[in-house]
Length: 273
Image 1 (cartoon, rainbow, N blue to C red):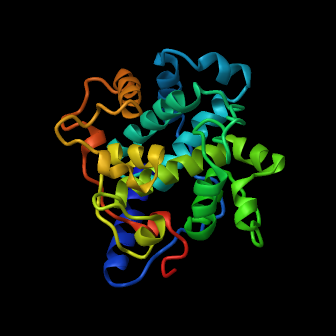
Image 2: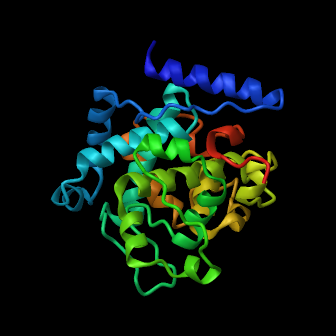
């Protein structure tokens, strides 16, 4: 069975069980598979970007980034074949927008600094994932989850050097960024909802523009979504520009404004908290 068909079958089974009040998790311990055709396509996406290739290649991380993008999409994006391709292009575009593909980028002048390829933050992304995120899925991307038990609010607001170095890891950084984008896109339509709401089965389906706005501004970002001009926000516009260089001709409707389905089983571990 093709990987895309297998992922879709598992997803549909999860949806059916969820409707009956249950939830299925993939208990596989192995890394998600990477198709060589997918890898070649994602490498081509990197090549058409206006910049960033040199930083990624000088770090010797192109192959790791490509494989992580593919695995992150398998775990956290909608499972159909089109969305897997669109997700891969989106994450490459988002990494270009966030860091120009500079793995080591840390904004040390900002409290709780944004870190790495997708500029994730310890006190928000990591803390929320520690409470609610699907850690089995993250491990299949290649990121081993540390023990953060016992951290105080102050600890969460001031990551240590070791914690920053862990956040710079390609597999952890891209996996956690993908989780945040697609969780927010899946369940944070208006009014704003938080991660614990979504993981409790609350929320309103949104779209990827909403996911980007929430990623950039927090859960209230969805209130800035403009249906008449959805790509006008300065955070969204360059990501769409880069995405449209990779995916041609642009699908209609554009993937960024297609409504998602809520699927807490895909994104959440502690569904009842």
